Structures are given as C-alpha cells and as structure tokens.
Image (tube, rainbow, N blue to C red; front, top):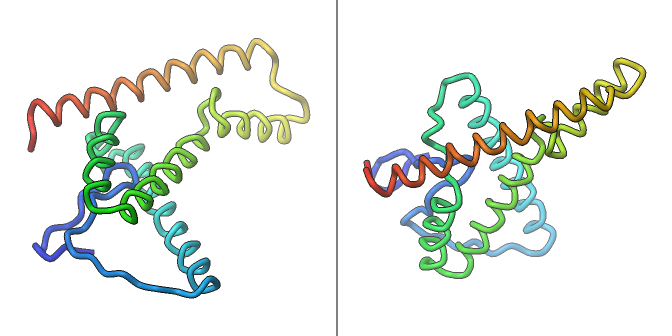
Length: 160
C-alpha cells in the first residue's frame, strides 16, 4: 500500500497516519458489517504482526507512540473530519485490546497465561508466584510506558 506521493505508510502500533486521498464508500447494513469485520481483522493482524516484529527485532520500537503521539494523531484525524476521527478511535480501541491480551501478568493476557499454566499443570500457580508475576508485570508496563513517552518526546525534539 503506497500513498499518492509513492511513500509507504508510517505505522505506529497498528495506527497509520490518515491518507491524503479520500474515497467514501456506501454500503447497506449487511455489507457494512461484513466490511467492518474484514477491516478490523486486517488491522488486528497488522498490529499483531508489528508487535511480533518488534519483539523479534525486525522492527524498531521507535514505531511505538504513547499519549503524546496518540494525541497528535487524534488531532490530525479530527482535522480531517468526524469519519476519520471515529476511525481513529476504533483503531486506538483495537490496539488497546490487543495490548491488553499480551501475556503480561497484570493484564488480561497475563491472567489467561495463568489459566493456561493451571490447565497444563493441573493446579493453580502459587500465590507467591502470582505476586512475583504481578511485580514483573507492573515493571514491564512502566518500562513500556517510559519507552513510549521517550519516543514521543524524542519525536518532538528531533523530528525526522
């Protein structure tokens, strides 16, 4: 996918900057539902792919944005109109849902990981293990928040 200028889109954890060219498509209710599910699936798989690439080192963590970056993209989307802003809100919601499913103990994905361990092991993890996991999960979240904040500030101070 390339823009009119021939440049590839710049992704930030499943969110791309709005395209300069605009096309409006109208669908009936059934077709609109099918198209929305298809687009949601496509965006979710793009987000999972990008997270996987960052974990394996194939993509830079500089692609991650925090509150400041999200606000900047939200502003750009809002200036393009209500439909683009609502699309952006949907993308943010989808990205947050995916991040929430990461196997970090304080997130829902971490709880699913504990359930999986319980299923395999045949008994729940010990309370001590669960508490240690919570501390590790909180530390990972703070590091993730710190990294995204650093990226946001770095983009403002030294734009590329």
